[in-house]
Image 1 (cartoon, rainbow, N blue to C red):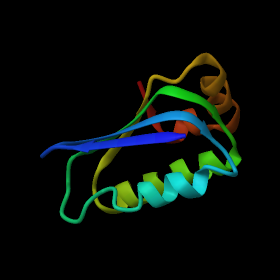
Image 2: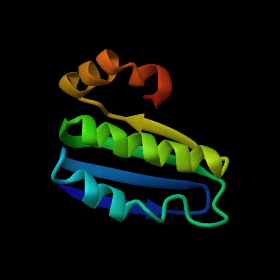
Image 3: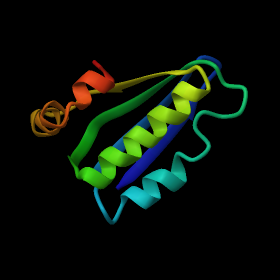
Image 4: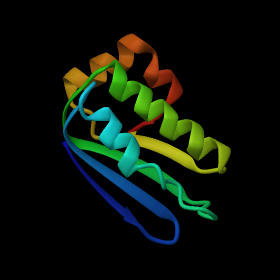
Length: 101
């Protein structure tokens, strides 16, 4: 898994490549622990264009990030889900929890 985080004044983008599963979810959590940054009140986007797979551990990591974002008053959007990952989001009800584009 590879994560790239870019932040400007109003937007933080987290680009995820590869698998977010039991083995890589702790790394996702560690790398995104500072998101949102203190005092940041913009939007957060998780760009999943390069993501190949997500397990329940990865879904838990996404929920943890959503809770932090919400607590700080930030919006969070998940973008570019491939068909397989979109199906997982649909089956688990995550399409009702997250803003999906």
